[in-house]
Amino acid sequence: MSSSSRGESRRRRGGSLVTKLTGTFAALVAIFMIVFLFLLTSFVEQAVTERVLRQASVAARTASQADIAAWTKTFGTEDQGLSLAEIQERLQAMSPSERRIYTDNPRRLAQEEWNSARFERFVQPESEIVAAELLRLLPDGSLALAASSYGGDLDFRPVRGGGDEAFGTGSAVEGILVIDGSQRRVIRGSHPLTDRDGAKVGEISVYIASASIEAAAARLKLKVAYVAMAFVLIGALVAFLLGRRISGPLRRLQEDVHTVARGDLEHRTRARSSDEIGELARSVDQMTESLREARDAEREAAASRHELEVAAEVAARLTPETFFAPAGWDVAGLHHEGKGPAGEYADALQMADGRVGYLVAGASGRGVAAALVLAMARSFLRVVAASERDPGEVLRKVNGLLAGDLRQGMYVTALLVVVEPNGRSVSVANAGHPPLLHWRGASQDLDVVHSEGIALGFDSGPVFDRTLRVASVQLGDGDRVVLHAPGLMELPGADGTPLGERRFVSLVEREAPLISESFVGRVDATLKRFAGGGRLESDVTLLTLARL
Image 1 (cartoon, rainbow, N blue to C red):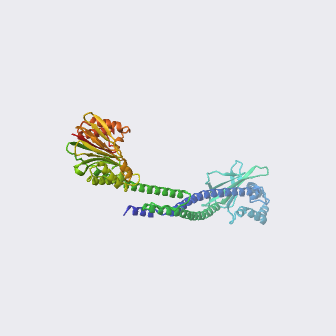
Image 2 (cartoon, one colour):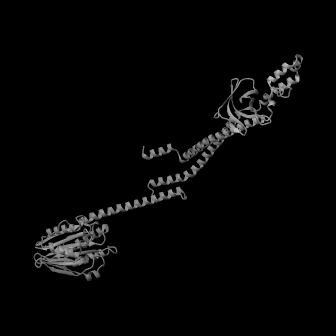
Image 3 (cartoon, rainbow, N blue to C red):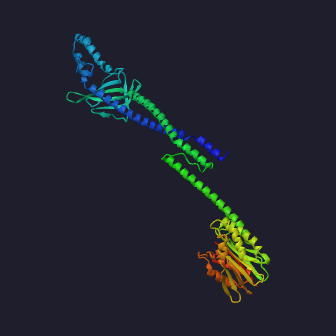
């Protein structure tokens, strides 16, 4: 499987942005609602519990407003206010007939039965009060059960920290009520009973079932659960719509990036918004433009490298490795290409009547254009020289051939030296080139041979023909002539200073007595030292003839 196929498979397993946003947002809403449900339920349950505690205290306080006697069995009878011992003493003081009448008195019995059922009536099935009891204060300060709504044993165990919560003069506490072995979770509200002077004479307790708390909490949990589900669904819908809104531009941007990745660097993104996606799209466009520019630059660089390779190949064929030397002459040449090839060259021309012409030429510009111009000029020079004896005539005819083919601004400079048959003179023609140097062996003097002429290609004929002058130079034994191209004078040294005419003339004067091969070798070594020992930055072309 390819890397792109594996990446696509991972993207499919990872799910779309819409799915991720929807799931994430729904999960966050669900977590939030669960926490909210827990906190709200706890708060409401506590609030309901506090309310029921208060209600229990209020119920006990309400019940305590009645006189303590109102809760006793003898309330409303002739025994009201008497203690059990006092009633017993009264019965003992009665005669048998009075005791029978007292015992069988239906009104008293009915009142006592009504009084005994008062707590039972206080606890109704439809109410939340499950039990009530009356405690009488004993002389020792303890409380004893005086009346209750139940007939069996009762036990109460607090569960909310073990202490009562005060509500005014009353209190309430949550706990477990055990009646005859049956347990119920209740709220006990208590309130003291006082006499007319405000002294405590007892306490009344009311037990209220806490089922209302649990029911209220359960109802609340159910409602909040419904709300939470609704919020989760709404959140999922909002996340889905938001994801669609976000993923749409992102999907289009992804398609644009894929188009660019397939090589279409002219393609631009379709997002035009001013948000982060729009900024991302503009960044992608900038990246694409940079890639296009880099691609174009690479193509141009590749074309330039190809041009340089072609120019180097052409330049390598322009200057011969060795130069033919007529009898009685010593000839040697030197040629180095600078940074750009094909700026200059040297050549030996076979001319009519066995004459030999020595040429150094240079073209304006560098690279392929200069290489092609020099190659064309070299071909013309060789063809024309084969049928001519006069160097001036050679240059005139070559100028006529070049002038019509060179574009404006292009030209060729040339210095042509022809060895005459007598072997003691040379004819010199100069077309805009640095002049010939003539070193005299007898006097150790150096002369500069000035011969007039403009560069080849500037003019189609009249001006060139009129300005060109051929000079004749007589050479004695040991004399030397040096032809060189302009690049030699411009050669930069290690400190960036060009070689210049003065240094070169001094170099020629110093090394001229040597044979030509040694002369060229010493000049080459000196130039390399001057340039810092590395590759020469500019073209160096030199050709020398010495009379033996």
